[in-house]
Image (cartoon, one colour):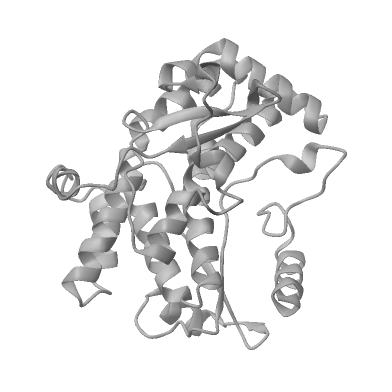
Length: 294
């Protein structure tokens, strides 16, 4: 994955030891303060919004390569932040306070998946989400793969919860929107890679599995399916979302984000293409125009 130019900076820890850190480092007020100060300078945005914007960037830079490996290459890295290596990207010989990366220690093991599954509480959000997903999968190997994806996402929650708590303590950001940002990072990347790989149904299945691993903290994922230049109506959409046979290889799937990166508070930027703060009709028009341009 590090051979992909877009992933190389966030998968390759610099030789500079000053760039290396652990969970405690990324929770430290000095580290967070430098990151948010950098965001304020980059985007001319107030600190509270800058904190959420930095977390958005952190989540996407740490999970995107691993999610690509899951969807496109059928490899499932372990996203345990305590086991892998978190680091600052190097800029001009110094740690960049804003941009970070994560190198997983290994692929997730069968033992890790088994421990995750056996530790689920009956009727917990995660157990219920996996049960709903399992009902749509007939092949036991496919189901095992999705369980491994859920276990990998779940492995990230311990470390992520510490950073989320630290952001909240320093910048008065509530945890729910920060968890939503992490959940959306997983889901949006999975469906995007599914689209790019001409297998949108696989992207949706893995998105649902990853979301299940975070289900104690995030809402269920929602998707729009664009077919032949128009959004599917509600009945067609529900069938497609169920993952039976409703998603065609030529469909384009878009995750309906539940989080906001807050970049629109900057005078240098507007609302993102999929920003949930847009009027629904504006978002739909922009999405259709975007897909038509592909």
